[in-house]
Image (cartoon, rainbow, N blue to C red; front, side, top):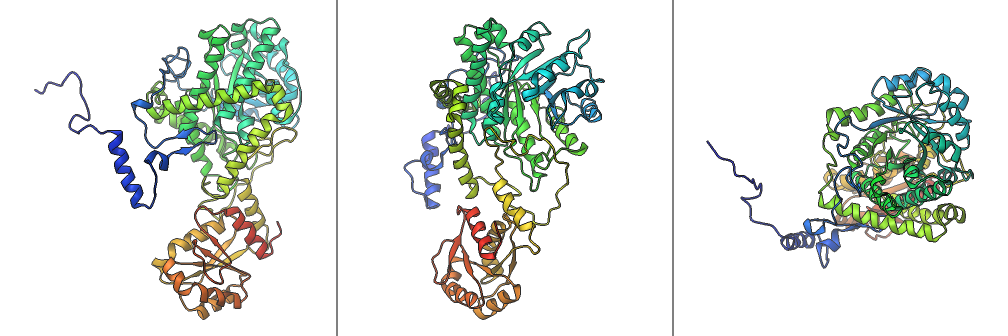
Length: 602
């Protein structure tokens, strides 16, 4: 019988590895790749849009101060000691249409709370009694998103309780409404007091940080805005006579969850640390647990190849659950096309079921806790967000920062940086800027209010990362004949395939089809194939060696055959070649130039 040692060291058979050894080996690989750098950290580190540096390697020396324990201040590891282990997270589905059958179908198939958009073009407040008549309001929380109709909607909801008051959140958020629409409203203290007199599970205020994300903001900017907004509400509530404890208990925070799982996990953990610090300074450290509602990002959703959104939202939902959000909303995959149908709502709610029931994501409390990378990223993100928060405070607080344009200017700068990276395909969008499908048949959806829809105007812009590429696709699709570029493939298939595939992928990202000449190096043969294609623009595709031998002659022949522009896939300079496309080039500029050359009006 083998006696197990008291302590099993998994790496006992291996010699200990050091960071210096890794540096030496990594530098060797980099030099073989032609990269010269003083250190592998310098060569491989990457900054986020907040300026937080993500390093290629982390070890125990990177561990920040202790994140504490789950359920205890500073709540980095979650607000509940048991996490989501007992019952998973709250599955919150959004509805913007007064469809009681859809609401009941959700609640009967895994949804545990409702998020209702109330308004002129959404659910009328007067329809709430009919919409919720078969819903057990003391069991299924209802969260309102009513904007300027918040008072009317709240009155309608509160009147439905009968002997048992409804639970959820009335959705008061005047600063969030100003950010989204520019409308100025006041915090309804009377409704807050009514919530205080009701069940503990009924809150009055949502601090919605998603408008800052939707306007192009980065994680620290979203967090900084949420803390500044939450603090503004605390001040107003305590000025109205509420205690700090009462005020803290009325707030719920809403954040965007993206397909960048580690940044989302770190963002939610950092948000709790930041709010715990606010509660500590206000004298109630034990009540600093931030209740979080995570919503899969609207900005990352695409209208083209929308089925890829299922993958994006699954990653985002996973990150939200691992990050410790109490409530999670998965947007339907067709959210950028219009109102979801029964199928897309089913896929959205089943995403939760797959992660919670099949994958067991909620069975471990704070599964990212202890990861050197995640702990360091959490701490760095919290520090950057605190700086953004202090900037807003120095600008006079959240209301003043919104009114003066301070917040909008900072968000716009980040949006421009991200837009440039998307244009250069440094940030790829699968199915849009990469691997587009020109033969796709999009599902048809009814127009209506959707999180991933267009901005209502008047407030911060509402950005979708894919919209510039998709606008070109729409222009190309609207043409009687699809714009087409001729690919002059020089040499054997094995030689030209890589760059021909790259060029075709780039042009198709703008809805431009491509036709290939077939393998050839004969300028006359290629020119004849170009004439037969009916194209006006050509692109040479081959290896650098083949370009050196044939590019100039083929380019001259193509222009003689009527080409108004000759591109080359690569970076080489050759006579007769007008422009080049390559990895890292401005793909949007290439496409816009091609549209102009093909006579497509933009």
